[in-house]
Length: 405
Image 1 (cartoon, one colour):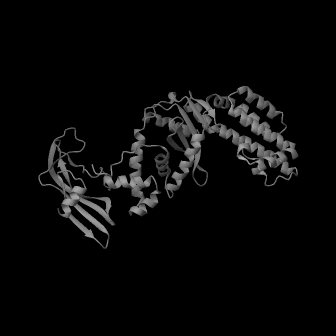
Image 2 (image 1 turned 120 degrees about the vertical axis):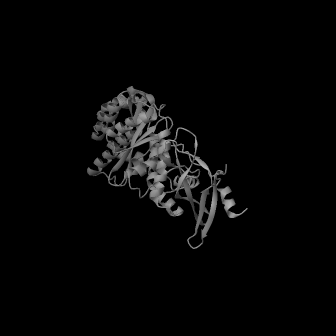
Image 3 (image 1 turned 180 degrees about the vertical axis):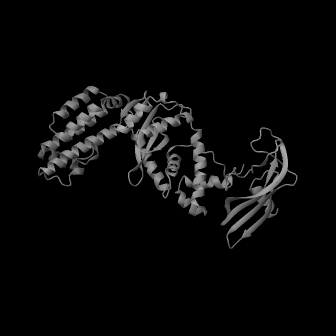
């Protein structure tokens, strides 16, 4: 068996194709495999309704990047036939080792995509010796194809949140399926129109706005407006993590006010922040000392911890009791928090009843920040979206097999 026969078998070429020549350039570290079709072969015209085999009309030379042969960059070069259909059209046939329009073989694409799921595209390009722009087109093909195949017919509960996309307050809005924990969609910005963009995408995945029963989000007025406008049948749920952030901020505002009044609370933020079960006995004793020394701080701590206990339960009566207590506390930050709770009452009660939180989407945001680092140097929101879907969308990529069949 000579080299041409060996490479013909290794490339798993169909019977009408063969390796006609092998050229190794040691200085350039390049191996060129020239492919040709067997004389007299006939081919099917791509896209034709019939499956008739047509004779070759003429040929065009095409090349594809293939997996490296040891340390040598390998390229396939072939005379690709064009056939004349019964309708009189001359069309180029499809080759079995590459998809139409690609400059890579299927096996190279599979390897490159596996690397892109684990490494920044820029680094994959440096490793493979390819321009990252070509690899971004490759990633776009497989990710967008997998995204288009997704069915959203079973989506009933949504999680909506924002995450930073680039410097300069550039944000994207994320839409996550609360049940499967899959990233469904990303939209630029954090305005109400972001919800509209998601709703317009529903039809492409077999879904309708009326099937969305519940949306968990923060108290962003823009998101509330968008959900009311585009998902009128969805029940809005305000996430407890954002509520506790507001309570933590109210507690810190009380601390800052005491400092302005002369209290020695510099550097004590971490002593009062956090949950009691995450603190040591020494830290808890210090916290108790501060609350005893400054009664206002003690009342603020009590309101924060009580609010947390109320949100851990399912009793709207207890929530109303807390609002009354906060309003009578003579602590302005907690009076404002109580007013905010009443303003968003329905959404908070919906949380007490459904227990749906955005905890999952916070984990998704971690993956999105990883995707941002993997897409560093990305030139458009589209590239960031591609990496985000690749990392957090749980896409079913139909990649060619790297194993011999």
